[in-house]
Image (cartoon, rainbow over all chains, first blue to last red; front, side):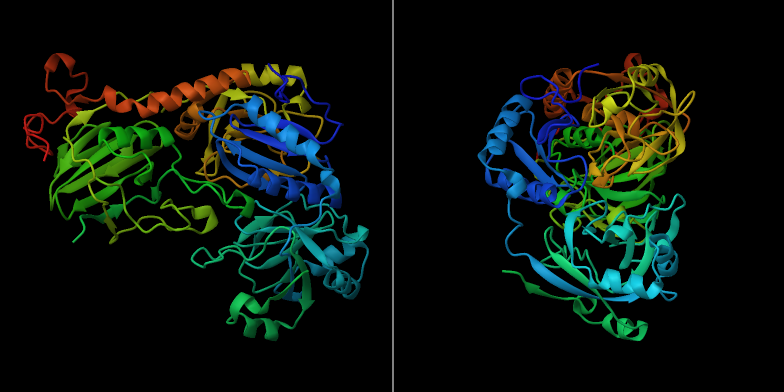
Length: 256
Length: 342
């Protein structure tokens, strides 16, 4: 058994010290900035991933950013863990990544959303768990200006946050059988918006007509990490009319 | 008109697969691609073509196909019963399928995923830079009756009637793993138990991953369900809420919150993907250094598979399984080896 935390120096990093580099699989490295979600760690992960992309590392195959980490996969026939780790350590020393700004070209989205009704049947339940009336819950969520912290799990699927503290509600232990495409769900001070029909442990509180993944478009993924979003309340009738317009009625402005 | 394969019958799990589409991980789209990537390399070697070409992946059951023009085909992966116009043909081999002939592929005899390769690859249109269906992402669809699958240009015509010894991987066995993100959340005693355990491949499994039933208790760890969601790679072994391991395959999600006890080496992942329900699997930890060496050697081996090709010779002394040879007539004219390359 070897340490899972082997780095270029062969030593295990202290898990409590951040940032740290860990191996993932046989050909990947993960640079983590925290072990719990925080705004600075999320910004650091996004910025550090962009820095890896710009660094022109030999053998680099693919990168991504999770909530608090940047990941890269490289071609082991071109490079090795030691060389890539050293390059990452050099990049880490370059600046205080926790103070990095958000990505450029971010957008602020307004996404029409039906809260509750038979379209999103778990609003009342989620509100009760959060200690709110349904009206308070709608006001709280729809006024929250949340940010895309990462895109993952399914294609184009955003994790958005951070919601006010009352939304620190757990996921359900039993899965909701099927949340339809465009379903807005809540748990652990985050929102997720589903690109495909899916079973989930998150509670279904809103429904949008927003298509997050359209593979044959020039821009296949609607949202980008760093984008802001507001889920604007509309009636079921209004949403039905928006199903035929681009982006299900969602609009954006570019943030400067 | 482009040579094509007409689908007259298809099992429920037949899809077009290649090496997948890297580059979209940051947008939540996993690479996907063939469940058994070694089978793609074997098929490419048999047809002396590029291993990036797409093939038909057949989960458990094949189908019936008709060629619109003479073309070479190759069969790799899980051995399935196969015949051309009723005459049994060998698996792990290339054959000539003449225009109008019917290729019939039945159920897997061992393993799960069989592959049908065509001259020039299955040339359906690329989407997001690859031809692979990624059903979990809603990309592409299963192959169905009536489809016409175009074959790409035969770039390097060569003889059919060649065979290759397949790397055995269709009945479970021992797979090597490297430590992963949360390996040290598990007590050393749990790791030791994990390495000693004999797991049974559950009937629940697909291209996203396979569930494994432990021989004894499930696996506990200190982190429980509180670890933050993190990047997932194919091969990762998640320990789900009830302590059951779940090995992620090519079409897995891109991030996940279950702790991972280890990650299967890419070289050994076909053995997991191809293990049929009920097959026994064991895990053995290796160092990262050893894993990298294994992977480098495997890459080299896959690139040189062509050197291991040999003709499907009809020498009775070398025919272990007479039924799998074309003893009377069939897919080739029989003079392929004498003919100069066109």
